[in-house]
Length: 111
Length: 114
Image 1 (cartoon, one colour):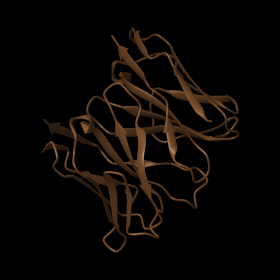
Image 2: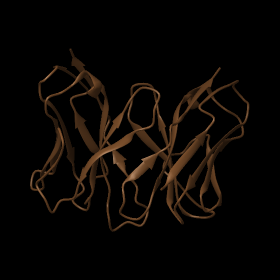
Image 3: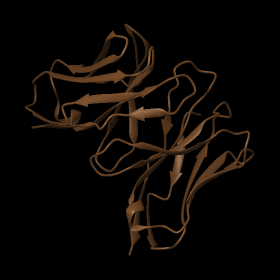
Image 4: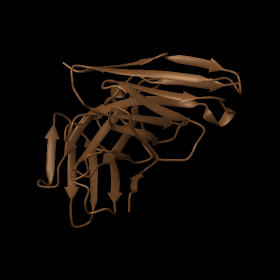
């Protein structure tokens, strides 16, 4: 069966520090991968998606970037975090017309 | 065109009652409509989904009603229980797009009182 791993679960980082969040999927090949951000009490905002290795599309201009170095690995990064980058970050995968499955999320607090 | 509008923002229901959450969309190319349930500090989990070739889908106490002409769909939770207290998101996507992007509503926080 397919599983999705996302880490770390929580992270507290100072303003101006770098960021790297990792997501890996098991049990499927060539999935579509997504990074969403959820602000407190708000909906899910799509940040990036990828339909294949090295293929990244950005949905909103921001201080973050994404990379897909391997088929089932998706990384969210920042060179210098801002206070406004705080939030709950969710990785998800989807295979063709199947439902999207989410990881357990990373709670990022920028201080 | 890409938006999915969800209402109400919050909902309080007595145990045993019916919870109803509504969503509306504009893009007629959307052809997949899932509902997700999210508990605090957890990722959303798929609850139930529907495609526009049917007007209703039921799984246990959860039912999706779909009105293609009105471009609306709703989630009904029958016999609501305190364990159903969570945030619910509707979503939509275009099957013809290879990106599989899901566009989410803003969410509804449901509280079921014992």
